[in-house]
Length: 130
Image (cartoon, rainbow, N blue to C red; front, side, top):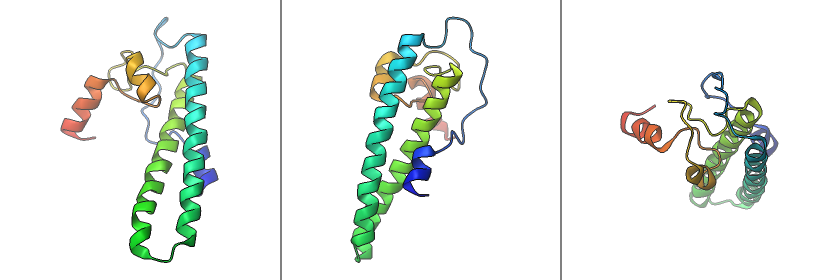
């Protein structure tokens, strides 16, 4: 996937949207702030990807390329996650856990704005697998 494709990414792999109970989704100001944080992260990750892709094009040593290629894959996944979070902002479901439907803590969203799950559901997922 190219940088432009990664930046446009899709919300692939996300659960079907659930109706949002009144008062559960973010208010307008919170949604605007979330969008700004996510767009800032998207710009940062896209810039990082451009730099690393350029570096990989100029390197000849395959062993030196492997860490850079792994980083590119990680950045592309982060961009897909960010796009999915922006779609949740648009749908009014941003900040709600995809598994249990409960609000994700504000502290978690500040650290990981594209979080799909609350801490408890994410821990369960790590223990049992996807």
